[in-house]
Amino acid sequence: MRRKPAEAKADAALTKRIAAARTALATAVGAASRRAAMARLLDLLTRRAVARDGQSKIKG
Image 1 (cartoon, one colour):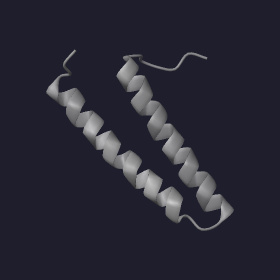
Image 2: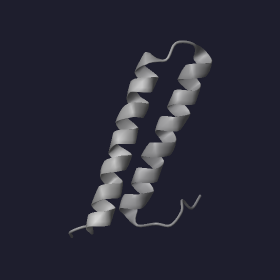
Image 3: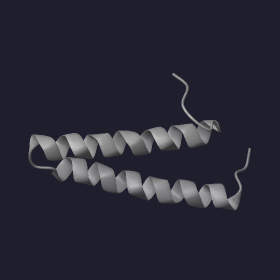
Image 4: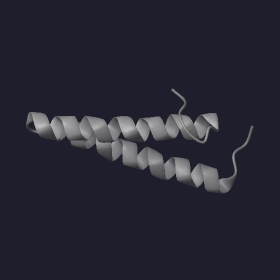
């Protein structure tokens, strides 16, 4: 299944943001900074997973 150009562009932008979040986590100094960086990374990874599944939101 091919994705629309807009979806591919959004996924590429999200991938760049995930890479930046990983770098922030790797370079974080201090527990609070690491927690914030991990929370941001998990949020972005969750957004990408939901977008790829085609769901509008996560159901718990």
